[in-house]
Length: 302
Image (tube, rainbow, N blue to C red; front, side, top):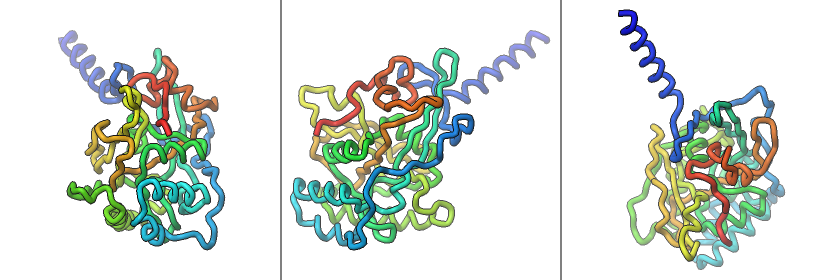
């Protein structure tokens, strides 16, 4: 009887411990996102290094009208100049902390990093346009602001940390899904749903579920011609991702569902400030940010 009780106790303990952790693709234990690590004292927000928005800058609606008839190259040049000149909403200017931890060789390692609270948008708080773009432009803007794009693991961590978890709103597939009018339609649908969360999550609160992410991945360079876009995410309110990792579109493909989440290159390993690329290239601590092993080229060609 004593042996039976001990066996039951040990079995229950194993179940409890198993439910507290999970393993990544290479078998390392990864623990859930932790909202705050008070022992390190990292601030909850950090300012994006971008110039102020001009008083006469165009609204999201006005930008949609301008870019609707442009070629892809013309459109992306226009978007780049608008962002570089500070035409983004005020609520995107304070990047939000996301925290996670992993057990490495029996010791917890903690990481904190700072992300846009929503996907990159043009315009004002009152009238903004969540702006799909190619990975080349996304990479160019990331470099402009000393940022990078998320990994698959980071997209999951951001969803876990998000206070506002939105329900994805797919539009039926068609040959129009890569056009600005459909971008605008989806922006309106997402904006209407976002307003239903305003009471519990004002603009600037961390949001997830409204777009797919363009991610960095080893898949970018896993072919003779690394000109492809890697997408992932679009988690529903239960945490299930609609979009698995997909590398089937070419480099210039962009549709209404794509979102750009910029993340500061400076991250915090425990209380040490380092570059995200150092984490991603480290055999020991890569699993804090990656579930596909080391990522030695955490960027797209541009």
